[in-house]
Image (cartoon, rainbow, N blue to C red; front, side, top):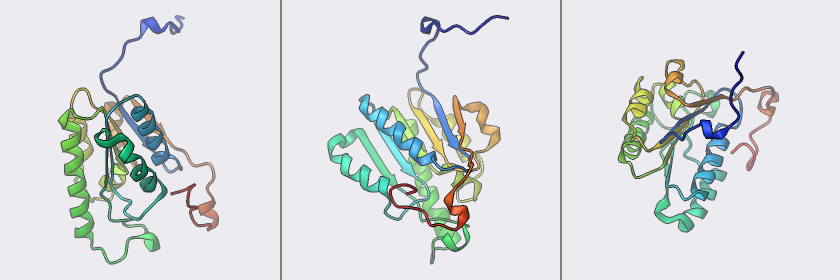
Length: 194
């Protein structure tokens, strides 16, 4: 049985990759933020586009505080209208159509940014939630993957990533929940969960 080579000379670089963080466990957005930091630290241009969160969370404050340092190297767009179809946690006073309109506008920006060739990395945070909940059309993720520029890496996060699209990814991680304090009816903690 042949063993895999550990000689990095046998490997080559891909011009771009598709990375997915999905699953019920915590850490999808956190992993995407870590990827953003790594890319910015390497001198890459990054677009971080969020599909669900609209309230002020820790990552928003952090990104807004570093934007002056990175100037046009970092695009941040907060395109969500809040939780949708999440029981008591759902955004109040926002209709399904308003949620859909906001998500479609966010998708339009994501498509344009990914196709532009101006960014080395485009992160679409919680895009699979938006597609799964019907806020954007089924097939939107496929359209995004097919339309991205050849030199643009893409990172997609959220629960319920479509299994049919895994074959179009390079790295796919399922965040598996072993335990979460929310199940014991504890609220999310600022600085830890958001």
